[in-house]
Length: 386
Image 1 (tube, one colour):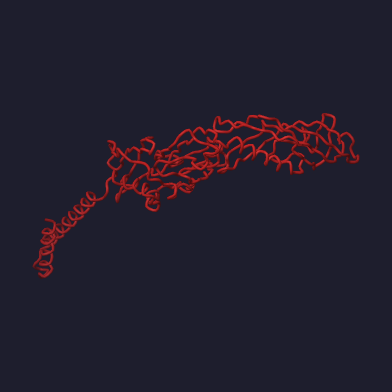
Image 2: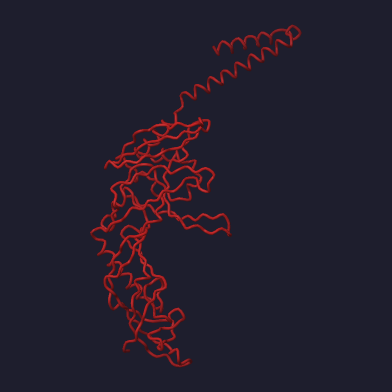
């Protein structure tokens, strides 16, 4: 029908063009132009309607995206995340084919009822191999050419864990630390340690299970909620499973703790940096304090661990709590000017100091590697024979 209208309009315009100008009334020219314009509008409308009817609907877009993830086609999957303007602020270490698995199923893909025809909310269910299930929701927007997924990824926050990395499907990701603030007068928020993840089922900390094992066999990542009018585009989800010690946990943490203390003892400072011992209360003012009335002014000293302590780590409130199983001591020696004899000669000193476990913090910073740190240790020292 549209073709016949165009043909009629074209023939009429052609005939009028061949006629002499004086024989074609002005009203006829105007009528022919109107006919041609109406025909063009009709053709455009029909073409647009045809495109709308043939382009993928929101359910199909979601199914295609999840299929690309299950197929391990990271290039196709990443095409769906182009619209996330905060993408570079969060670690993408896990957005690789190695972290993708096919060992999960997608069911119950359905559009929820809504009043806005340009917005679609698609619910779906992911079932892992161990039958763990979780329901997620994508939000899509009709941008005029296709349906765009506004929340294609999961933003995972691992700040509440005593580990410095995330491991899923044997792929290690190190969270980006981000701090949000509007200006210098705004209080800086607590840094977030975050990672992007594709929706799907994952096995957490498989290669770290000799040290720590989460109390979950599968973790299902679902899309983060899309936020309108907020400082960030996607909300974060907390990943904070309880970690239980593996079979080598106690032995390995104490082996590394021993090595770390020996490195601390290799320092010549009277208050070794980030270590759990110091030369008594006077260390912060440049003095070795062996007793309240026995201080020596010096900047250097020799340390030696005389009894290596043993510790136990207990996870609580998102961190490892250090419990002392066996106390330890360090010896200190050197030369210094007695504090009560200014302008005197340096004399030798020696003493024994405690190791302050209360100042100690421990994290599993990397796969297999613990990190130890102490702040402002309350280390007590007593003199020994020189």
